[in-house]
Length: 336
Image (tube, rainbow, N blue to C red):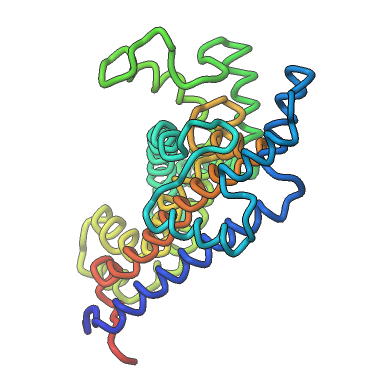
């Protein structure tokens, strides 16, 4: 193995910086292409609630100046880049004086707790099902039973979420239809609160796991079928190795690399949350926060959340590129 060369590492870090810069630029431009602005939208909501707001025009101009929205685009852009480089996400335009940093720090643990666990469970179950479906030594009844577990793969996860709420929340009343925990319990590392989180998070996690594990299964099944006739597989069986050893160390190990790549991208995208799932279940995560930012036209909140999503995904790809030789020794970074 040629190993990681300094040139390659510098090139990948440069691509990482370029990706983040392009992503940050795009998320600065897109919200500003929408009609209206967040300050006018905020005053409109106040008018709808109160019926009359004195000096509304002057208030709009004062707030636009307060948030730097009255300057030219290039001035707003460079101020935005400076805040991004210092990880100062600023104040929320719709929830002032709340800071975007504080809002994100409150929502991020809920999203990470939900999506990280749900993604890992889906990854493990999906890859195991896919590998068993393709493995020649899998008993026939197991091979016929496994596809049944993928029945809900074609259903969008938010539609399955609605179905789960109808059946298990309103029908059987086993789980609550929304929320993340019982507000009567103290937030912290105590058993009543942890039990609450598990109880409230079961349905949203289940909607993600059931609908996504089929994609892992189909990908692993294709890779296992491709590798099944390889020389190393035939040699391992000819040497009389135990079927379990052949399955895990020769079949799955050599088929898992593309799945690990997809897993890294999924984990890197966790910061963006599962918007529709969190909205349906009123789950206080990053996806629900992003939805609120879009509805209220909150530039700074949208930019902060999407920037974290870009950072997470780009960093996951960078780390994965640098770790590939450890996952599969056949991959080298020497000159071809």
